[in-house]
Amino acid sequence: MGEGKERAQARLENLQTIEPLLSSLRVLSLSTMQMAMNRQQTLDEYAARFNDVADLVSRIIKRDEKVSPQGEPLNYQKKQQEQVLAVIGSTRGIVGQYNKNLSRITKEYRTRHPRENIRIIAFGKRIHPVLRQEGLNFSARESLSSGSVPDYDVAAELIREWDQGFEEGTLTRVSILSYQRVGEMNNYKAKVTELLPGKAIRPAKAIDKKDAEEEEEEELWPVPIVEGDPELIFEKIESHITAIKFYRLILDSVAAENLFRFRLLEEAKENTSNLLEELSLEVQANRRKEITQQLQELLVGSGMLAQR
Image (cartoon, rainbow, N blue to C red):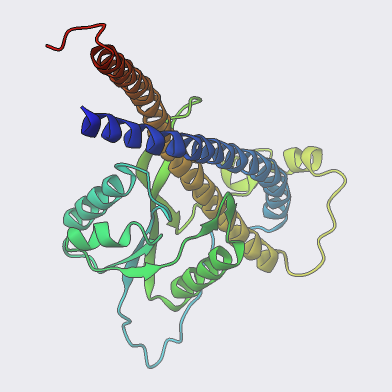
């Protein structure tokens, strides 16, 4: 009985030490998720204002579609082209099936495109061993965020690198595999989003050519002043809008990762509370038995109770 009592007492003390840590991690995950969602809301407000500027500039330039840069007609050499699939995994543990779902979808995506040259880039050290278990070749990268804050410098550098690949004709598509919010509730699902080539912003003339001049006069009065080449400005705007979309996907991933972690910690906290209650009752029962046994020994020793 003594050994059982000591074991129950040790388990109880361990759980009493772990419980506040679980509570702290749970609160941290919830607050990080909320901060990521708040940053996302601020980013959406900024994107809305930026899109208004993009719309004004797009109405100034007269074009129906973005003209891709032309290479030199002489000495043409076909370049090897590839696609990029960027997978945004987790940076920390306690996320359950988070990385396994991403790894499964990555393998399915690769299987659906057997003839295409796809370069997989995996962000977040926790997803790297999971992808290796699936036998996938990939470029391992560090996380795209720190806490609830995306690493804007790294993300911007990636956008510039991918844009250059499109200009040079070595890149045909950039897709992002990440968790994204579905609906109004806190529900996230892993899905593939095509980031590049993005859909070019269409000027008003391309949408409705009838009475275009009258509509433009009503919408663009007074006419905005644009300093510099409008088409060059428009290209920069398109690149910036792509970066905003990428930042939003990163923030979605941060919120999803911490939601997964919060739910697991919430379940662990409930299980720990139940175990604490059970072990507390077991320890109390052992103490009562020990006290009863000691009283019996005293009574027997004093002759007040016959020894059995």
